[in-house]
Each structure stands twice: as C-alpha cells, then as structure tokens.
Length: 175
Image 1 (cartoon, rainbow, N blue to C red):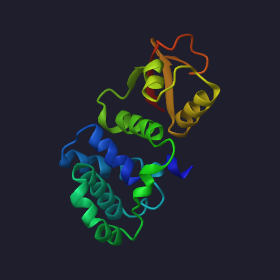
Image 2 (image 1 turned 45 degrees about the horizontal axis):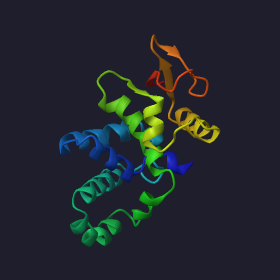
Image 3 (image 1 turned 180 degrees about the horizontal axis):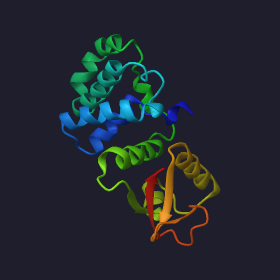
C-alpha cells in the first residue's frame, strides 16, 4: 500500500496538472506536509526540506527533462539517494494519481471543498466502459483509503457499485 502515499513525483505531477506558479506550488507543498502529513510517503514525513527539494526537483524535471537528466546524480545524492525515476513506472500510476489529485484538489486547491464528475467520465478516462467488479473494488479501495465520500445530487450519499446510472453527477468530498 506504499504506492498510495503521496510521493514527490505525485505532487509534482499535480502541480503540473494545475499549472501552479512557483509560490503556489511551494505553498501547496508546505500545506501538504503540515496538514496532510499522514498521506506523505514515510521517507519524507519527518524532513520538510527533503520533501520540498524532492517535489521541486520533480517539478523542474517535468518542465526541462534534458537539463534535469544531466543533474539527476547530484540531486539524488542531496536527497539521500532516495529519488528514483522508477517510481513513475509502476502499475496504476495514473489511477492512483487521479485519487491523490482528487484529495489534494478538494483539500487545498478547490475553493468549494468538493469536486463533481460523472462516473462514466472517470471510467472513460482510464479505458473502462463497464463497471466491472475489479474496477469497483479498485475504486472503493481508493475512496476508502483517501477518506473520500461520494454523493449524488441533493447530497444523498451513494455507493458507486449500486448507482443506477453511470451518467449521474457524483460529488466527491473528503470526510
């Protein structure tokens, strides 16, 4: 389950997705470390400097890969040898990143404290056309781990497995 914790690569991807300027990116990095520390990968929980340097490294890396590849050994040494580009190659990286982004977006980026989307949109984004048992199990595990509640219009709590329609608008909130 370590892959479910926020890594520096994950947060850098989220910064890139939302195109945050450097001051907002640093503020987000600090707020995650202070307010959502339990979800940060254990390698970074005790050392803010190590966390911030790793997030900023991966943010820069995504902006200028060629230059950063040349500097990778020096940055890796500075971060205690714990940066690995293999972290980006694991299975379900995109799906896990979706839920990490969802939680961070609700808690720190969104002004209204929730995110809405259709289940069909979520499924289509990751190549699913039907609500298979495997997909529903995967979805429920992530919702449970990140403490995300799903509700339909009117704030009626719903279960993604038993929803009538894939086209109903779901509201995601962090408990």
